[in-house]
Image (cartoon, rainbow, N blue to C red; front, side, top):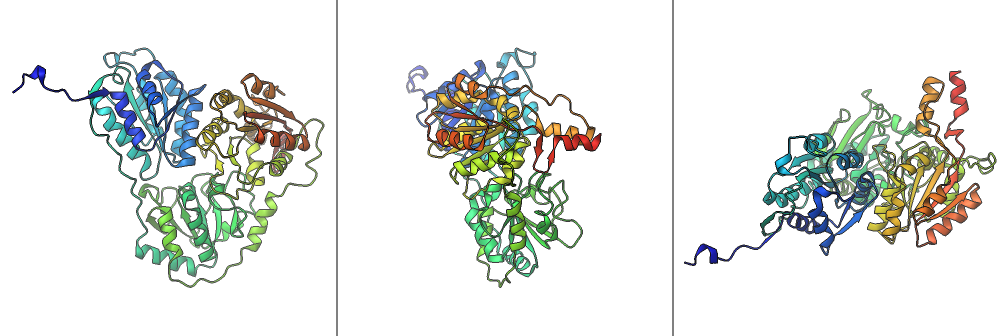
Length: 561
């Protein structure tokens, strides 16, 4: 027997490279980050891997929003990475967005070195505890040889059941340690349970017998759009899109009845309020979608059934008459093929109510000197942009005009945070353009949200992501100003500087910039932006007085006067 010193040693690799092999094998292609000293080897391993790309951003919040947006668009997790305390804190906003939006994400957090943990080392925070409430699973790895295994488990957790983010904190000294090279752990394919035959027959019979059946479709049904259309047509059911999931069903279909968003007109909600059967598919029945947990009605005359891939979501938002744990696509395909007879229901009146709510009101094209009406901005977008434009939209009162006025006719054309996080639109657009370079991608934001993460335009320039950013600049934190005016009769802290030269700001970051004051100028600027090979910011000067589609700021202040 050969002496121990002469025996062949197993090949080794760094813990970081072993983890990156797991990521690549799972189809993960990008990591978004602000590089930090506590994960040097991880960033290097991603950058050197032939199947992965390291995208360096200008702020960790932008990195997390980018990872969330890519995963929401593609269905495949992306990685967000940050260093300990400050970096992890900055990253948290996008991770919370992924949690509320049911978006798979893998988060690596560099931590203080092993021998310094627990001693309030430089920037040390208990990252497992910090991230536990905003992730599906939060853990700290304490052994280098367990990092690949933990990464595989994280991918499985992020992509099964209700998808969501997971976080792995790793002491900085572990990434570079040598570990034995082993077969790459491959996370198993996410189980997608079918709808059982008895469940299918029960639901099919219930929908067929209903007088006014309605479907509420959420993000879980986005990949089953054609099947959703087939079921709606098969059972002659009206369809509502859940909060900021407007692309789940073609808006130009005669069975589409509207969007369950903030400030939804009461007339648009009428068909839902009158429904005797409501089928909820791939939707967690959030506060906004249910209009403050009011709809569907709980008066006993409306039966609600819910289909969701995660048993924990069945009946979580409200009591349901029947729940089925199943993949949305498989369930909808089964329902479409059920052997039942269905009577025709006429939804033309409810459909007409929604269509009328989306119409640009007359008289908005001509407005106060130098300021555009928000409705006129949406009208200009409708005129200039392709129907299949991918819209990323921020939080803010400007969005109520976009939600009503823009029709989502094509699949995968909306990326928007149900968490209501400001600063989402610009980084989300950057990631969407990187992941789908052939798409027309337009970010829509207010000046508040745009200036939270607008510096990611430089990331877009550096990565050749020719996005268009439309900014409704009204010099106001509009949503909060509206609440203040309505509840208090005055505003405080919501007037921000303006007008600012946001076009000049964009040019300083290497992008193109244009300032517009009229619809004609906007249409021209958008046409040029879409044709350009550089990112473009279009600064639209809008009227702060027009606070929502149904109110002016003066009216709200006067009501409390």
